[in-house]
Length: 319
Ligand code: ADP
Image (tube, rainbow, N blue to C red; front, side, top):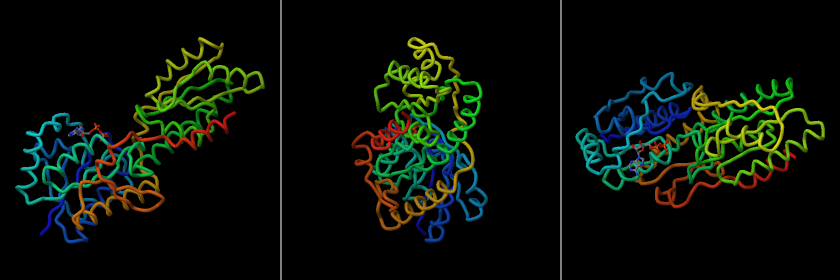
């Protein structure tokens, strides 16, 4: 019987459980024996691997986090360490692996594939920063979590006539800040993909105040600067009463939205389809609502780009 394993790695994201469920159920449907690896690549090294049955993934589609746990495992960069991991799989006769994670996890997945374990990546990260897919699993849920927070903060910003600075996740990618900014009607969005001109932001806020605008929402991605720093910078140019809010890890939790559950189900099952057909060394994705596969080389070839058209629109709508 063909044997396949699945793991989740790197930062967790809502919908990872739905993806695990899809991989497990589709594998069993296709006649595979399927194994769960706990704690990401760490579990491959420590042999923390367990056979999974249909019932093991019951009642998880609606849960945030990951049933298989996740871990950072810096030593996986070492080929000697990976050899040990491959031996743990081979001893059980497992020759196929699905890695659910972000681009860091894809690096490990690409190595394993090159070294003999047929591996396919599934994009699980709230950052939406992976080439070869329009959306990553968890992005929609995190976006809605942020928008919910922005709506609530807007109520108090309006009541007290204040400028609020909301810091969201995104060290290198501004997708969450951009989409949340558009959806939440933010006056200003600061993303790592653009030069941040705080003086210009201050001038816009001042112009708004002069027109009678009573409050303002600024969304800043953590990779640009902290909310506190942004407030201090602003006050160098204008006399404005700011309040800062750092949303933090709540953005990674919570039950996945319907969209994320469907995306995870489609991508998880598609990864199994590819492995069954002998295709590996690639990541699955969704582009224009079609399931696609992209080689790891292509995924890594260039940095993820922000949607410039949406960014321009955000500026046009927040005048
Ligand atoms: P994410 O997958 O969310 O981007 P990380 O960047 O932390 O998260 O990567 C997750 C894990 O992937 C790392 O802890 C490490 O085990 C593995 N990894 C990252 N880069 C490499 C690499 N160059 N070679 C092998 N494994 C890697």
